[in-house]
Image (cartoon, rainbow, N blue to C red; front, side, top):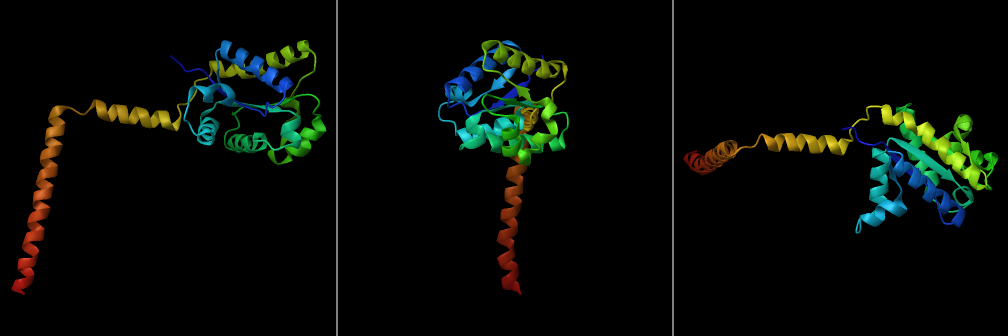
Length: 209
């Protein structure tokens, strides 16, 4: 069975309006057959996880990125520009990797382009989702995001590097039988004995010289 598309949502939801939009987006992604990767939800389930390590792993494994650009992301300290840089680097190597920037009021297009100029935001203005303050506008923006991500559900998604390693290890272990383990143990023991014999003979040979 194909896995659901992993959608990383980059955000700085320190204000109530952004938090409400994020909650609604997460709900629609989850119910729409996607696997949303949102730190404020998923990291709560992984107590003891180093959050920076988890975020970088998600950024590597996700199939698409939604970037919420609110006032804090434009003017204040935020991880959003860093995450956006990672995603635009991924897209440079894989043009099929979807990035969906979302402008949240009161941020203007000019402010967003100026703050994210290093991520070539000005080159994908047609791809930006612009939200409105009204509830209907927020619902429409989320519907637009889901529609742009929907083609991923019909695409054969590649396995992550970690999954490939897990499959390799599982396949290797499946071939390990008691007979093979005994054979390997005998070979290792014979190798050690040969090595020990060589070390014992060498000093005698030196004395003879």
